[in-house]
Amino acid sequence: MVQKKHLIVTSISAPNKVLKDLAEGSRKNGFEFILIGDTKSPADFYLEYCRFYDIQKQLDSGLRYAKLCPVRHYARKNIGYLIAMRENAEYIIETDDDNFPLKDFWKERHLRQRTRRIINTGWVNIYGYFSDDFIWPRGYPLVLLQNNKPALSDIEEIECPVQQGLADENPDVDAVYRLTYPLPKNFRKEQPIALGNDVWSPFNSQNTTWFPEAYALMYLPAYCSFRMTDIWRSFITLRILHENDRNLMFHSPTVWQERNEHNLMKDFEDEIPGYLNNERIVNILNETKLKKGREYNSENLLTCYQALCHHGIFEEKELELLNAWIEDINEIKKST
Image (cartoon, rainbow, N blue to C red):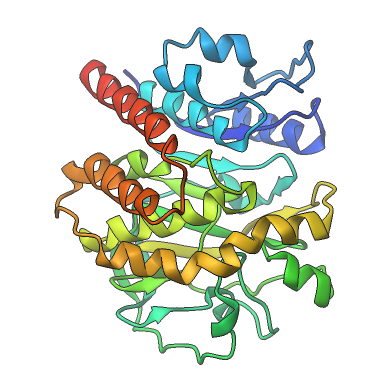
């Protein structure tokens, strides 16, 4: 099977300007553009160069996960990831329907990167390396905002199986920031920065590249706050990357966001579980024993979720969904 790059988005919008830009960019740059719909998606959705999966098409996909995932939920994006894996994607980029791609968004992505790196420092506010403004990413513990920035290594060439791009104009900040500081904000163009062992920073699902060794870690949980699903995924991903001495990379913006309408106080309410638990989750994950080796990614993923369920972070029914995800991945591995 010929490998192709895949772009995954979930949306309930009719074809808007962002989706049209993503479709046209996919056509020009050789991407398979997969859009995962939901119950509120237009029944007559059509966009050239975009493969749209409505609920029925998702159910007909043969994926066990698709039959179990709740509707009206961002976690249905997982179905798009699984479809891309089944099609032997060279790598997967994910974004959202309010992120306009910049020119560099379509540049070829590579596992091996020349970056500066941070190692063994605990939490870092990654935005501080790309801006002189007081700004922090959604999911960063508020009690640590006054911490100093750790020093960076010299430039080195390393492999980074997960790569997070920033977003200009309306960056991914929490409701506390949006309620207290002005936007828009743009970031500087800087050399990429990799997070090595025992370095923690939240990353999101808005502009992220995943390479095959990390595909199993793309799982977005469904039974938690909507505002935490990608943030808590990021902590679990980092814990498993740390176990295998692998790196997460942040790079300068390749999208700018024209944010969909949000109720900021509702966002704040939905982010409270994160404000209260983000540090605790990382502590739980650090205390959870995992197996070294990328071949254990799925097993380690399950171990992490079991530990977090035990501590009340996720509902126990999350494990049923996760097991379906792992079963689908195992079936995909057998057939590719």
